[in-house]
Length: 90
Image 1 (cartoon, rainbow, N blue to C red):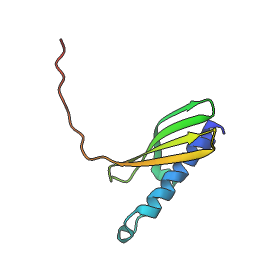
Image 2 (image 1 turned 90 degrees about the vertical axis):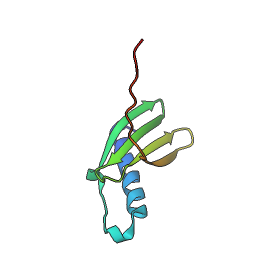
Image 3 (image 1 turned 90 degrees about the horizontal axis):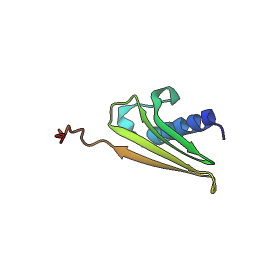
């Protein structure tokens, strides 16, 4: 699987997950143009991508592909807090 195809697959998975799980009363649906890849890595037949959407819901998505088993795993996370912690240099 080439990188462009993998990235497109990641976006498709996120779109499907979002559209299947969004609150129906919101009347909101997204497409691939609303998904962006934050980070991507491919090693041999495996890959991992971190993605988010243009929807300000604090969600981000981790997509992992196991090339040996031909399986794709999706983890969906909710951002609960963004906290600044000052670090003193020695």
